[in-house]
Amino acid sequence: MAMTTTTTTTTTICSTISPLKSPCTSLQPPSVSSSSSSWKFGTNLLSKEAVTIAAANEAVVLARAAVKVARDAVALASLTEEVWFDGEGGRGVERDGRSDLMFRRKKRRKRRKGFGRLEVDDRKDGQCQRLVMYEPVQSEYFGWPEEAELCLRLQDQARLDAVRRRIAETQEYEPTLEQLAKALEMKKRSVNRILCNGRESLKSITCSHRKLVISIAIDYQGKGLGLQDLIQEGSIGLLRGAQRFDPKRGYKLSTYAYWWIKEAIISAISKNGRLIRLPGNTWAMGAKIAEANSVLRTALRRSPSYDEIAEVLNVHVSTVRLHFERTKSPLSLDRSLTDQGCMTLQEIIAGPDETIPEKIIEKQLMKQELEKLLQTLSKREAHILRLKFGLNGQAPQSCEEIGRLLKLSRERIRQIKVTALMKLRRIGIATNFKAYYA
Image (cartoon, rainbow, N blue to C red):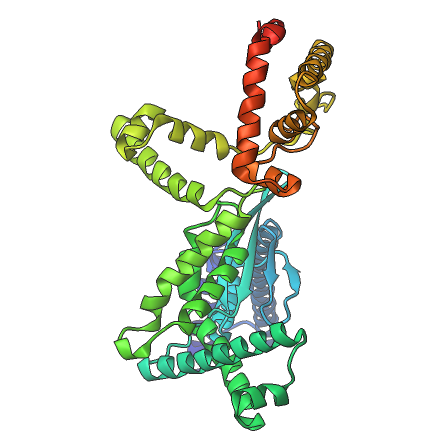
């Protein structure tokens, strides 16, 4: 029985190490006639070879693991840098070389804490850098009763602020809490409670509708204001709508405040979206022209002309042309025209006609001729014409303004002006100035 067990063990060891070593057919167990010393020597030799082969296998596994770790390190080092903005502290912390797993875990932890993810592409020096900003955008959804209560508290604070502004305008200083309570015929504690409830309601409404504001603001990116500015303006519009919200009508605050958010964003773009501010009617016409331009471009598969846009909008062609001229982006006169920067835009733009020497001389001669003609009139007639047409270097004035200055009626000033012009026509003013307009 002892010999059978030894043979089985030796065969198992040989089958295990056979892929790495030569076949074990030559390693036969010693015969029964062999001495005990030779049998012990063969057994020790087999055990040493098995340990050596096992160690070699372990070394191969460790080498493969080291290669895998090195590849992962290279992949981590080649990842794009991302800037993470913590919503709580407001400070930027640079984190370089994050794997996808770490990225997902970070995103999940931030979402659980109530921080939403906003990605903005910021191009700087020709390179696109992705800014990942975390802000507290978790929406705390309220039911209709909670929304109604918050809006009513906000409206109470708005009425209190209106009284405060009225007192400040009257007395020219900010009223104290006691003066405010006396003006409202309320207790100081009640006024303080209204202010505290208003601040809490303002924060709750802003946080609960943050996603609504962001979804509207995203559609207006690239029109002159950044995403953060658009979100800020939309939040102001949200609070303005909440102050006018009537819970008794039965609809939700988000339905009513949608228009106020959109209107606040559009108004902010029209006021601050351009270096040179355009009037509000120009922006309204611009929206119609942009819509008509998009529809015609899709239908005609080319850029539409001014006449085609004017025909669709039923407006004059000059209105469309004037809009495109006014909405052009302003250019700096110091802008370089070449890569070397040796020439600027200011150096190639022609100056006004007043700077040309010939025009300056003509203007001086015309003033001399005009003074000779005014000397043929009475002093009052010449003075009124100078004030009316700005010949004295000042801005032209109306007959009413001249009448207040000379203590005469507007009709009397008009009569004197007409009489003076008739005298100049009889003298032949057209003949004297014909050379300047030839």
